[in-house]
Image (tube, rainbow, N blue to C red; front, side):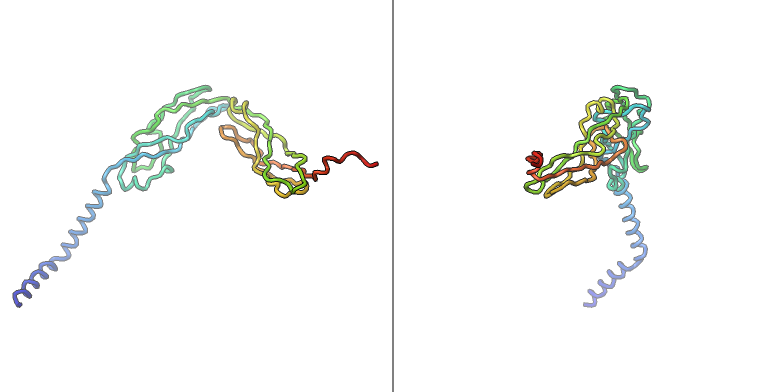
Amino acid sequence: MAMRQAVSDALLHGVLRYWELKLLSLVIAFTLWLFVVGGEKGEIVLSARVEYLNVPSGLMLAGPAPDTVDLQVQGNRSALRRLTSDDFRAQVDVARVGAGDALVELHPDQVLAPRDVTVLRVSPARLRLTLEPVATAEVRVVPQLTGAPEPGYRVARVSVAPPTVEVRGPRSEVASRPPVQTSPIDISGVRGPITRRADLIPAPGAVRLTKRRSVDVTVEVREERDTHAGGGAR
């Protein structure tokens, strides 16, 4: 029994002896492990928004110009885990591009990125762009109505103020521009004339509204019997 106690005391003394140095060694080893793991290089692929700079005066980008590209990025794994697409911007300078079609190269050094990562590759590395002269035009506004008036009533007339709005964009797109629609106007259960302010809905593409963003829409609702009126008093 005494022998066992002596062995236990010896083991305990060996464990506790120089415990400060042993703890320090453990802390150093753990720190080195974090440094090695955190310092390992890695690669990821993510997307980045494309910014077109220095568009020549009087010209606009037309057609489906790419708005994002894919990036192959290298850096410490710990840094890569924190990255999002918002951390990158691919900048394309079109100052020397004239009207018409063009093929513009995009290199990794044209990408704005955090300092602790490296952009290895951009895909696609070439962007096909089209620049056209800027044009403006007056376009008709078409109101969108939803629902139906009170039973026994009908929509007699719809008017828009102003009836047209100005748009601006690439010449080819402005030439084929369809009417501008309004946000939906609900006429459910209506029994008389109403006027509503409605937002204008931009259509897909590069054509944009120049000034006005909304219009006034007046919907005249009348009783069905009004369609038979007009015989005059006897």
